[in-house]
Length: 560
Image (cartoon, rainbow, N blue to C red; front, top):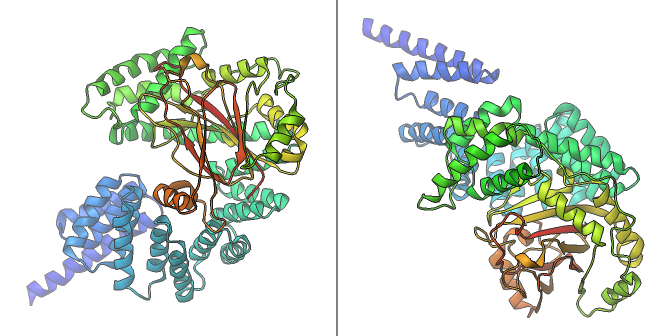
């Protein structure tokens, strides 16, 4: 009898310890919660609940490999632990193992078919897999089981928005906000749907409300910036909002409050070699022009050593993991912004020697809505764009094919950029006049490590793409340009389908007997085409020099 009492006392003590740990966890005190879970596991190594919840803490702190190991151990002890399956799905999603994540989300709904959270999680997994209609069914089941589940209403709105069903999406977002008025994600998503419906003023109000609640939401700030760019009535406001967006992005990646986390991430995940190579080349370029930037010389010294080590690796395409001292040497420079500035835009950004009315008519009369224009920019504007793209530290987004992107809503903006948009509308009024400037961007390629942009379509009505790298750096003249297929993406395809489904796109083109036009690369050549057309970068053979990197700038007007 004494032993039984002792066992019950131990169970009660364990339950109290777990309650205390969960209380820390629920209050966001992750370090205290982790310590409490670890104390429980020291006494009870096979406590599946403590293993699972400790894994959740590590997931919340970004340590997803550790989280995966802990939750795996919990599931070995209790294979029917529905919550653990659900959180394993989130961990695997964070590790980009989406098929495995979907399997765990599905298992959770089988084990707990009446649990709304499980169906909401499954919906997220299905949406990530591109199965949008199935995701909507799961979100609907979640809100049927729990009509007060604001997150599921919001997610259902996001799925409808991805399908282009904007009015339905707005209804779901408004229901989520009725249930939870101070819900920044729902406010930001509502703003996006309203913007897509042309309700710009209401969208701005909604983005502002979202940012009031979550001032660090760089995506909401970027989307708000795009609305100011499209408005065109206050270019200074558009530039200021874009600079704010870039500052928020850099702060989230490398800023003072995230510095320790950045150093830790560089040690665990590494830095892509193509990213470091570009940034090092740019740093050397800036140093050669005696530009003063915090941490520049330390970045060059550390970066050279890291790249030398990466060159000896078996697969130099993989990210290179950094020692703590190396990461610390890189961060101050990465935190710093720099822009090429000039006294002001020239009198003309577009080449004044071109008969723009004739070029406009050529497009209107073209059989397939694909034309190119040589000597597109004025000489002064071309020189400015070249200097801007070489000097400005705005290349923030990395792509799988090892090229970098810079965007109008995150710092890739200036009076020159905006003047180009205005001049296009003025000089080609029949084409650009009816359409709002949606956004513009630049892409910069490493011809040695990458291949360029895969086949895709854009969300706009008109796509204007121009190249600025001097021709002397194109090692194979006649290549390096753009291949455009005279087949528009289907109106009922959602954005991800016509941007990521490469195999399905090629099948669609073949099934519709599509033809392609390949426009060879030429410096200061612009290609103008129907933005719904599928297109891809032609093969690249450019010099392995910083100044030799192929750079294109793209402007999108109107909506499909």
